[in-house]
Length: 185
Length: 318
Image (cartoon, rainbow over all chains, first blue to last red; front, side, top):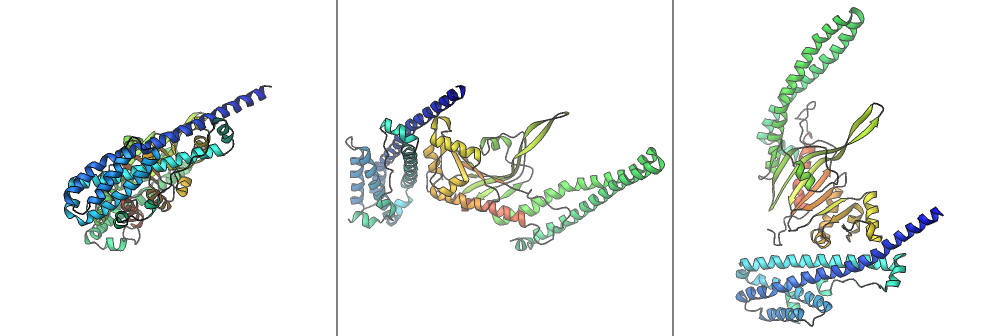
């Protein structure tokens, strides 16, 4: 009787642990997504300064700058969904990468301290976003494993939790960015 | 590298001078030990054939010169060791990079060792020496030999006995990391305890530690367990490229290394089997290959900055 009671208590504790674990994992996914959102917003805030500095020194990049400004405008608009923001951020990232390549043609801009600061801040933001995306994917994978594997799947069914998709690297991210390809299309 | 290095006139002169001192210290040590052995024999023989008093007197006659010889060896060995470190190891460092220097009497302080969080256990006995400081390209670094131990009390028939256990006997390396970060991230070798903690963290969140970072590099995750105060920051530091480089660096070591990232610095602990930068006493300094171990470890430490690509400064930290 005592042994059966101990086993029942242990099973109960284990069950509570798994239930809490699922809730925690779901919350972690939400947090991980918020982390990407914060990083992306920080990156959007860099764009006006970057555009201003580049505009002063370059004569032939007006189209690129307009495109970046336009993408930023769409990304920060209140109607943009989280998914839109991520997609637009990838487009902005690719466009700025192309711009950085074009900068090679403007030695004065390359020597400008403001531009250099912005360039390194941009690179840092890229690494931070990449880290946040990796974190999101790790969190989603952990959540998916918990939802799909026994014994978590029993609780997941009760809670209505379903597997979630991970963020895949875009084709643009995988390919080497070429400024010409980007802006002549 | 060694053959080329010892041909340097200043190093060659220093080695020849130090060799004379080494021979003197070796001779004094041998004579001292021989006298002490003789003292024991004489005491036993005297005690057996002529009584305790005669045994003691005869024994002292051999013991006193033995102590004199050993103290002569001792009085010269400090200068011999520091001469070796300054003139030979110092020259090797300068040849490698003019910014490098050695401070034999200094080491990474205990409070820094503890705050680096490389190890969970705090030392009860700590000794550090042979601090090397310098720069490789844009990256400042330093390292020193460290021997950190903790003690346990063991109950015996007569009471308790203190036993000492190594936390680390090896080298702690510290370099300025090329990115800024606020929290701390530690990378320690996997063991059964950490694997169990990781499993609970993964499957039964409430009971496990929630600071374990699950990284996507399988080889890295098999070797190490990573803890961090910030999951995103841990991945900002441990990029896929850095994880690959850490695995490669670890392959060059006999024992799995530990790493920590704290205060925008990176610490690496290398457990080692030998005490480096100590001159030989009973082997000639002029013997080919005698400096190989010391020169190789210096080169290895210097190359860490390059191996881990710490000179790439494309982020806001310059």
